Length: 215
Image 1 (cartoon, rainbow, N blue to C red):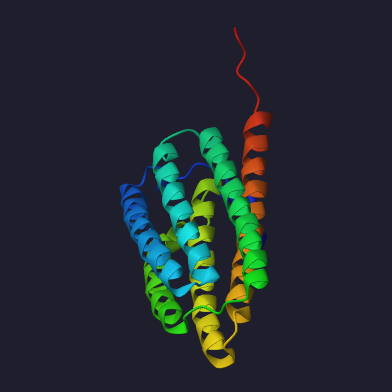
Image 2 (cartoon, rainbow, N blue to C red):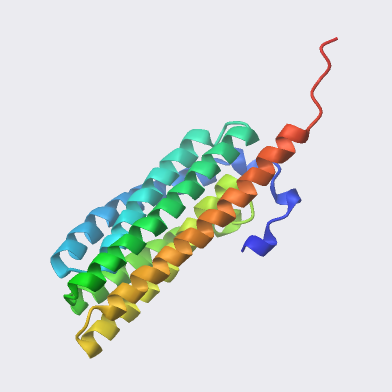
């Protein structure tokens, strides 16, 4: 997706004031908040590092959707600044997951795979539904792009969680779960850098615009 980020996508478009886009963000906010509660409980019960990491990701996305709603009608500069916050949160999530993987590797207790798989499937359905709603806005400004990247990465992470559940079931070890958590960290870090780069380009473009004369 980062290869498709061009300057013509950084302009303020009609989607920024689109009531449909605002409704989609509200739907995404509710879905992500609900899935945070579901995955937090399931991850704690099953002992799955990837489910707990995904739960925190859902919480971060819910906060990001709220942030998007707050800046939606603001100028491009403020939306780019909000995108910088989003990118930083994605990077922080990746660092947290790396720490959780290290702790899980030291402990070595395998999670419960059936809970992992069923909740991972539910999370995938939720993220695919939100991603389908956001698809038309995936090439918008940095803020819209950040929303799309978060949702896309979440869906990929859900598939990995389901694969990890099968791996845990087959091997009886925690390593598939920990591997998925590491993959999710990589997605978060990669997506975060992409959002930050695009937002900085937008901030630079607004700074470079000629200022009006005072007379």
